[in-house]
Image 1 (cartoon, rainbow over the protein chains, first blue to last red):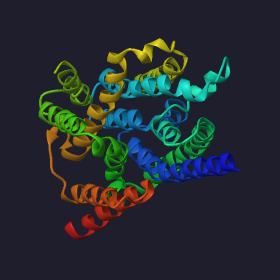
Image 2: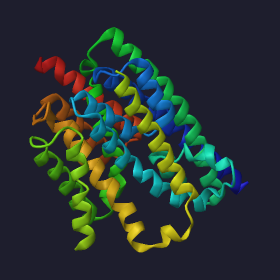
Image 3: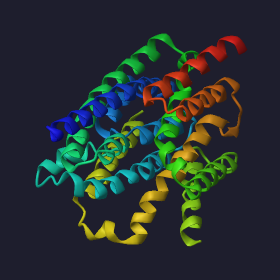
Amino acid sequence: MEQTTLRSAAIRDGLGVGLAVGLSGVAFGAAAVTAGLTVPQACVLSLLAFTGASQFAFAGAVGAGGDLVSAASGALLLGARNTLYGLRMADVLRVRGARKLGTAQGVIDETTAVALAQPTPEAARAGFFTTFAAVYVGWNVTTLLGAIGTSSLGDPGMLGLDVVGPATFLAILWPRLKERAELRALAAGGMAIALAATPFFPPGVPVLLAAVAVLVVMLR
Amino acid sequence: MTALWWAIAGVCLGCYALKLAGLAAPRQVLDHPVVSRFAELVPVALLAALIGVQMFTQDGALAFDLARTAGLGAAIVALLLRAPFLVVLAAAAAVTAVARVFLG
């Protein structure tokens, strides 16, 4: 009974997050088309890359006229945090063999956050797979809607969608910022480096340079 | 146009490989203190940098957009009030949209 309750709570969390991510999906579809990507290009990124921050970073750098190599590098450096989530989730999920290939696609911020918030391993697994399914469907459907809507309607800025990307990142960061002063300092430092570097480097590079702040904190 | 497709293919393949690498890596890797510390810190710095760049730059220069800043302020208020994720994003978008109507 207890197990079932925990599992349904985990499933509810997952579905809720899936719904919320839909709004970011519209914003990504809109941002991608505004940046000069086609509707199929926006959709392929959501289907196959399937990691919001990397996709926003790539579209942002392409839109700002950055070269494609630094646009892709920025996206991959951001995607590297999923490797770290994967290391953590391997322990929780305990998937074996070929099932790893499908499960891997679901290792992102939202699924990891929901899974790690659950009190039991069983609930964590239920939370992970429900969130993966809900976010995958929600993110892809809304990317398509946002991309089509923008290419036919125009300016996503009128709907305030340009703030959804940054607000999403802030919401993901928030629990960690509340936790420790060290992480608040790191966030402030990373942002300051990126802003200071913006006038002097091509788009995409300033975000990569923010990683220097990590080295400073680690060597301290 | 083709170059853009190649870049997209690289991002898609790379992002998937990064996820798989974590899930399939030997357990000892995470137990290394430097790896786990780096794992914790990198996303904080990069996400904060992305917020800064998307909020306060335009075409390679620093720029301030009052409506967008008001929207992020609304998101912070919503987070302080422990609002759910969807409410945080909706508040940010709504405030930015309304501010644009009034600010022109």
